[in-house]
Length: 150
Image (cartoon, rainbow, N blue to C red; front, top):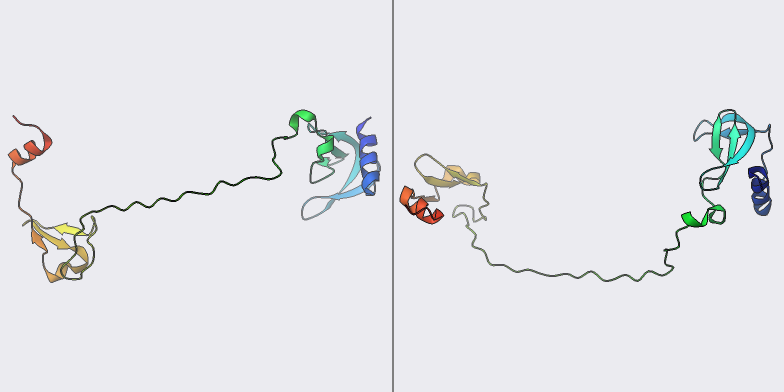
C-alpha cells in the first residue's frame, strides 16, 4: 500500500475531504499561503505527508499511533499512576544570635562594621554608637587556634 492509498483509507474512515493532486491547500501558521499538492509520502514515523510545490507538510498536526512502527510506540505508559506522598522533616537547631541593643533586630553577618579602633557597629544604626569593643587577638593565640604550635 503506497502513501496515497494509506492517506485515502485514513481520510475515508474519518470522513475528511481528501486533497487530490493539483488541489490548492492553504499552509502556514498565520498567512495561509497557497500551495499546490504534487504528491504524498510518509515520514520516518510512517505518518502521512503532503508534497507541495512549496515543500513537504505533515497532513496531521498529531501522530496516529496505529501507523507508527512497533519499535517507536511507547508501551511503558501506565494507565493509573500511583503517587508516593512526599515526606517532610523539620530540623530544629539552636544557634546563638546577636541582637542590636539600639533597634532590637537580629544582626546578620553582613550588617556589622568594625572601625580602625576595633569598635563594632550595627550598620542600620551606626549613628547611635558602637555595640561592643573587639579585643585584638595575639599572633600566638591565632597559631594555637589553627594548631600551628611552634
